[in-house]
Length: 110
Image 1 (cartoon, rainbow, N blue to C red):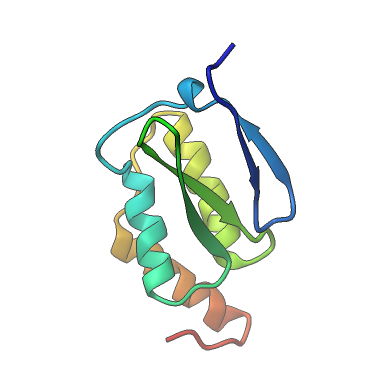
Image 2 (image 1 turned 45 degrees about the vertical axis):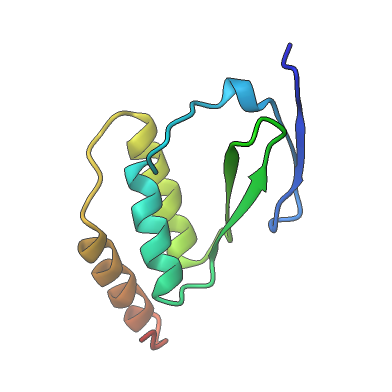
């Protein structure tokens, strides 16, 4: 059992119970987060990152997605690839695909 437990109420209205010691730690952001950050900077609203400071001083990044949005669906697919150890596409290609998806459903996203 962990020395600490985090209760996190996500933006998807789900309460997550996390043992921080069971989550892989790294001082570098995983490649998936480069894509996530680019989506947020581009203004896509179906993805959120919250930071939670732990008692040991480390910071845990909590990713929430809005299912049903093009960016939410894309991130679910990208997470599955990352978890399977497959390479991720470039940030630019993901953003181009999202723009094309939004144009395909008749919405502009600049």
